[in-house]
Image: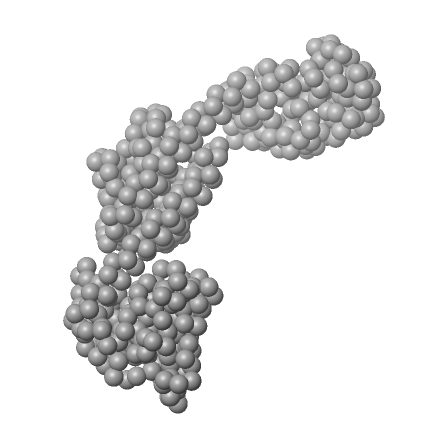
Length: 489
């Protein structure tokens, strides 16, 4: 083509760079097949500093070489790009590759051409996603300086906006999982995972919660009413830490306590401690290994938004825990963890009525510990409580999840088992009786055997109270008949 440059027979050469100052310099890719252009550009850009950062120049001598560099090198702020190199439109092809194939919208592309008539400016600006178009003849040292500073300012804005967008996405993604109802401990582990992702740091960390004295919802007793509720990574062994003088990480604990006392974040070269408003608790602190001393102002603002979301979710988790605790107190026997009598009636009324209407077999059993008063009188009430707890555990293990297992009161338990024929019901409860008979109980240092008497009603009624009364009468017959047996109707 008339007026085009003769393509140079260039051999692959290593990436040439010139660095000034710190390794946080702005990165500028110079793409041109003329050595002189690289030399002049290096000379001018080496003197530029913007926002206390110098320029790192990366050199490429063809469109193909530039593409290879862009595939492996990240954070290039500006590309000074010649149009005519190995082909007449090599530079323009590279623009399309950068924007469409590499999906890089942030890098500022400045076209430089020695033959502006061959590639009209209006056509290029309209049809190619570039940020500036300059003729090499007009690009003096001063104009190159102005062009580079404008490009860096634009690039910094683009990066900041993109970083804010990604940060907000992380906040929204994290919030959806953090606001799900869950236990405080599971929630605490979730906080550490989400924070490490958001801050792009190590997943090693702890989360501590400080309570008003005596108000911890399940946390271990600890120094200064402060508990470790989650520990990850290299701090996994801190999960049971009492946070006292025996702690292996005194510097870390001191920073956590400072965050809680001052109610604000503490950031050092080694640790990042974020204070969280913990609702009903005095406060919470999430510590992650890794300092954020160089964090930008925009990142700090995002971090404040994120921690406020976490604080709200933490308060939500506390409230959820309260609701669960209140529900459990109303429906669960505190000693055995089984359903209490109230919950038994609530669950069984619709179950028994449904079985009566549909003709489905069902069994209601009353189970009583033989000679339980003798156990309390001989070994003490603590030993009696241990017997109740162990039998409660055995009942949970023996019966199906579809069965209703409860502590009816005192030493009596009640089990309602669905879809059991009379023969299957007798076999099920008699097997439980036999297995309990083989258990050895340690009562105040003495080995003992414990038996049960069981009454089972399989005559389905429309009233659960009627079936329980029948089972209780059968239980009385089992006791009267010598105990350690099953009576069934």
